[in-house]
Length: 402
Image (tube, rainbow, N blue to C red):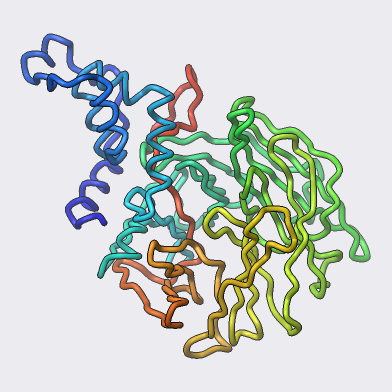
């Protein structure tokens, strides 16, 4: 859990400019003012692997040796792995988007939200910040956030190290009368971060065409993807699970009685379908999510309760399990649940109900509401892990956040 002092330091680092090589003092100056501890480099590396990103950014200035350790690709990947698997979520944060009184992004400590008493949300200076332009969190992978500003300005951004990459224009060739969906994920085989854009272009009589494009960070370019057979997309952003992005779709615009779950494998860029759970009968809204690295489905039944299904063995229909049924508290006709965000080490589930955070304990069927200061009604929330992963490729110019 982070203390208030830790949170303050975190924000000070966010406001500071990224460090470049010219800011490092000479070796003689370093040696005269600081003596590196006489420890084996292997031990120093093991210690640094467990240090938060905000401290590592400062520790790069200790010596050229420490800079070399912290900057190495093996260290960056190992540090990320250890941080991501910490069940106390000390290195995880929640990014929140808002529309009132202006468009904005904030973040807060996930560990503090789950295990603390009071959590503070902090304003973020995201790329192209503008209070009158809508901002949309597309997704998060390995500490990188994909953010869309309005329709066409897309960024891959690491808020922990304050570096970002602006993507080329992704608009389809047919620009009149379309809506769009994006998804963000990681292709582990090719070590590449990818964004998928799906553009549904309307025609006469309810007809439509779909154009799909995929962006690769390594190539810094968009390519067209064929063989899309998904229909009309229902959820805003693709859900990244097991190397694939997933969307809920329906056959035709305005017809919501039947759903499919489609996927695209970022490795080979091929489409597929996921078989769904055996839902209980009734009128419900269907929302995809991710819980504990597993694909999940949340069913809002007439705004009175929500069932949470989780696919325990990816791709196996019989592995769908109804994990929870949560009754809507207060004004059941007014609010709806969003998909669960995470599970604490105590088995509690964090989710958003309406526009506020809720923690559900399936053990005793209880609900509590964590206190968050500097927080109004949020539109969406996305978990990210603090990491050293850079969206900027080697030898590429580094844009500076203002």
